[in-house]
Length: 542
Image (cartoon, rainbow, N blue to C red):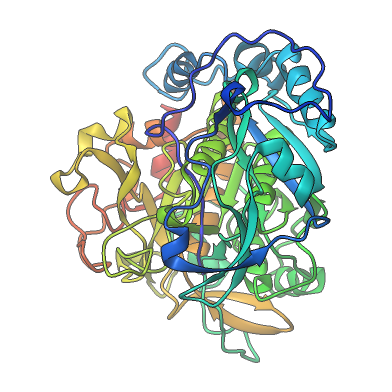
């Protein structure tokens, strides 16, 4: 299915001004507009054109927000991540601890206190201040949020989908000294709903469903039986839940002996089981298929702007080195500041040695569905490895036979991020100087898809939601080998993957995703292609 969020490098963040610890903000003291500044980009575009105003949010409605702060010395952070992720740099693999990151790039305790004092003076409840000192949770009534952020919260009905939502009518404002620190206030609207990148319906079967088995996936991608992911950790970002009985059935059928997944609920979790259950169970079972002994933690959060930012931050807080992401949305479905907020979390993760693998979408070259070309977020984020889709064919002995681009695999150029330095060597004129997606790819074609057990039956499921965990599983296998060799984890993988220049990949040269066709080398349909686990790991290990 589909849906994503994000925006980083190309969006300007408010200049970081030196801010003194403020005098107390009295709850009843008016703040003249001249002393306030707007958080630019933190309002939905085309609201009046694409939705109908239906009223005002009830004053007593409680809403949670996540307030993102811009890193100190953001340019220095970019430079650090570039070096620590570049295999040709002497700094490669020398990642920061959470404490070191906070000390170098987080906001100071005095600045955090300044923000907290203001929020409390407006009647808001301040929640968690996350590691890194760059994200603060808060909650309050709609009336309190309107007062604190100088905006009006209204209710709307989407013209296309008919879905009701609420949104701030104008960009939020804050006292100037605080506004200079803040890059986004997530939670002031709930229009965007992330979608999972896998089919919404599946056909049940009595047997393993006709999809690829663990043996076929591992054989097709040359995964050695020596490496199982033992001792490694993988995180899953999810906005729905799963039933352990389905996972147990899958593991037992294939004699995998996988550890029971751990669940970490963020902001109360994702609620009751919904149609995303298939997605979550697909993600877990694909990881078990390829890296059966890895420890999987499922981070379940609310499907909202604030829930998304908090869930990504919880993953970074955990320090789990590899994350698979199968949820996203077209770049155009996000606000600029919200993309900046999520991007900042990915960047912090990269500095701390964490790698994120995101499905590129299942709508081909038109992720937004508007007849043009567009890409999915967060696969388009420069600090994320975007994973496209292929159709894999294996021999009777489960060896790789051939592979073509899957027609539904997302790919194209970002409309938000400029092309990162590690991608310029394969820059295409069609990219127009912007980030090119995907970086890599793996099996995603729904027929045959991947054999899974979900909601009490076997089925075959496809989509780039299958491809993302296929790559996250490889990263866990690589990290197991790197640990045995006394080397650093793969971390943010893109600079290393592009440095490999195609070595260790199955180069996919046929197939199309709509406006783009596969070709020799990197392309907009499959990136570098799928992995040959043994040869790619050998190349990356040097």
